[in-house]
Amino acid sequence: MPEQGAPRPRLDPGVGQGAEQSGGQNAEQRAEPETESAAEPTGEPAAPAPAPAAPASASAPATRRTGILVTVLLGGLTATPPLAMDMYLPSLPEVTRSLHAPAATVQLTLTACLLGMALGQLVVGPMSDRWGRRRPLLTGLVVYVVATVLCALAPTVEALVAFRLAQGLAGAAGIVIARAVVRDLYDGMAMARFFSTLMLISGVAPIVAPLIGGQILRVTDWRGVFVVLTAVGALLTALVWTRLPETLAPAERHSGGVGEALHSMRRLLADLPFTGYMLTGGFSFAALFAYISASPFVIQEIYGASPQTFSLLFGLNSVGLVIVGQINGKVLVGRVALEKVLSAGLLVVIAAAVALLLMSTGALGEVGLVPVAAALFVLMSAMGVTLPNAQALALMRTRKAAGSASALLGTSSFLIGAVASPLVGIAGEHTAVPMAVVQLAAALVALACFMGICRPWNKRTSLEGAGS
Picture 1 (cartoon, rainbow, N blue to C red):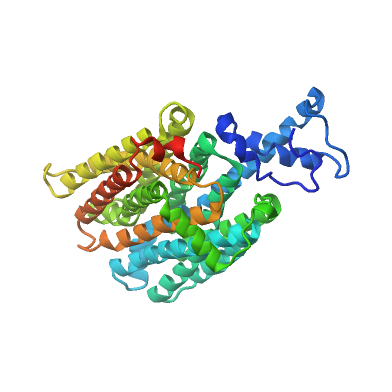
Picture 2: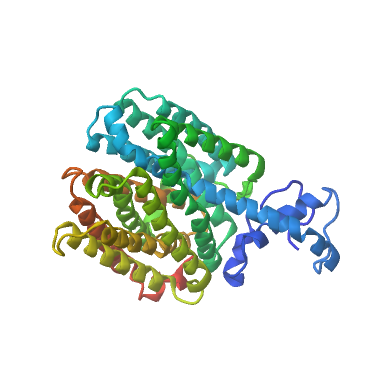
């Protein structure tokens, strides 16, 4: 049993090195060294390799609790973007009236948050490679809480845009470091499975966030949404402080400064398959974010749905994403090549975007809310195999500098998504054509990057050639 009698409880950053051989180990098994270290005295010598059955049995329940807690906490950190954006979505029309601002300007509050999350990851990722995961994460969460309070107090739309930018910059810490922690602990197929598990947990956020946002609007205004977000951020900060151990050993950290971080990123971008998977995931995320930023106006303003109806439809789409993500992790990973699953997901996204474009232009005649909602459900569900597999395939290309790799993945996704956000409102808030056009264009570019740069039919760029 590894690392018996460790000096303090923590997750062993080296446990992921054998994941590709073991494959099916889950989060509870990965966290086993933490529980065993906490259960034994510091000065006690290590036990022989074949551990006695009785002690192992006695520690099993605690091991499961520890593994589940770490998994849920990582899922909560990856849920930062949907919490910060989706809970706020039902209130967008009210913000336009409250602050006397046009819809295009109010949509910039989403763009600012997304842009902040993109740029913040470029800073936090290399910082976590140098100083470990805990310190940058805790700092980012504290600043996130302060920025969210300021959002609740914003007097003008310009101030709200600025505070949302700060909120995104700080919230980037949770996103990038959660992915880096997964890379510290997992490898190969086990990493792909764990990303699907995170999608199950973080997928709950977009399901409940708009529902909560819609209910908040029943009793207060849009400022109350940011009050709830403040409470969630404070809870995450407390849990990270008390429950999340350091996963990057001092020996694995980089001692260089900005120059070393830039060199590491250049080295990652020089790996064409990594860049291809990064762009594939980024443009897939753009199709997703086009839906996130445009759907409140499409569903409520064009089809006349209430904020509560929109929240229910948004939650249903998120359920589809979670279910498909679990099918990906529990059924497809290990049985079907990740590249094949990714390409199938991209084709489904393209088909759904084409259907939306035909309906929004009137090519199929007058259609109601149900067909449009069905097409959006298919598009969102396909993201359950597109996004986690693109991230897993990219991270499999590197064993070191996981923070920098995660930063590049997140930054590219959020920057491309930030460009997509204002485009969906370019023709006003009374047509769904821009949303469908942006979604279709983004999905086609994602497929072109996957096929043209990653070249999945080439063994050297496929999973077997990863891990450089």
